[in-house]
Image 1 (cartoon, one colour):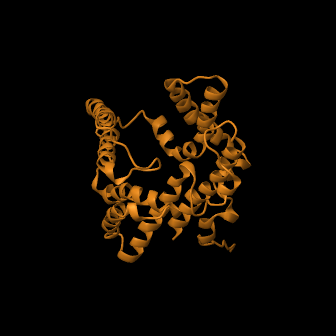
Image 2 (cartoon, rainbow, N blue to C red; image 1 turned 120 degrees about the vertical axis):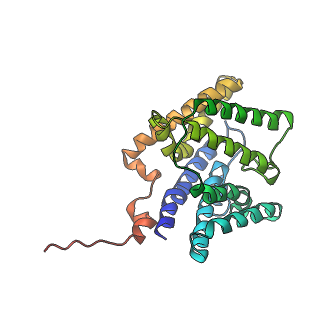
Image 3 (cartoon, rainbow, N blue to C red; image 1 turned 90 degrees about the vertical axis):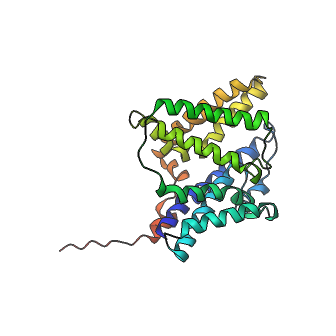
Length: 277
């Protein structure tokens, strides 16, 4: 229960805060951005995630699912049960309602379940092979080009991967796993730091990416996709890192993590009383 409480603090709290923040920016920017958002849309956050934050909603549901299965079946059986459940849910995707992120959850859970199922079946050390790294990277690029440019593969949802392209999702993840194993085991502290702060980047990057797009498109009349991608990637990553680093040093840190009185984990943690003898 304490671990699940930590997920509420680390996933659901940022989901609520940043859905409201990004939603407010979208409402204020209705005149200069594509699409529109109304204050009424923000009232649906508890049952209808908006924009990119569906992922956090679905991720929390995935953690809740595995915790329930562990409670019912035990640690050994839960990963298998989760994988079976995820496949069934994926097949049921067309029949699920759009509320409570059920469709996105049904399309995404299989990848989470595969990670849980395979977590203890892979070695924990890297092979550090530059040759394998190059081959796997080229294979991944070739796979994506063939799937999208040659076969014309597309997904029926802009928010996740629908069942018709599960093969592509799993193949891409397998090649990414090989790439990660092929990286050298030392000298990549910058990459480890980047990975450890992926949540910071995810929460904040849309502010920079959207601003770059609006400035280039609306005010500078720049339509170049490479320019947009280069600037969007740079400011989306490094701008987010800089902003969240500043926030963590001020009271703005509570936009990223709950204060103790709102922390579910803090409330459920046993209180330690010190006695002076």
